[in-house]
Image (cartoon, rainbow, N blue to C red; front, side):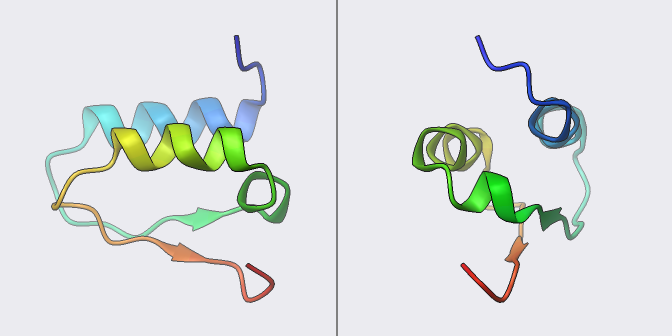
Length: 55
């Protein structure tokens, strides 16, 4: 199971929010295809997300 604290925070925010919001995804998550795929599955059409410039 994923134990990355940034990932956990992002996942919790996505699952608990019904509002429009922006999140900044840390580089080490955007570079990890498994973590990024997991986040993308959680996201719905309500979510707009901005990745770091290096992604």
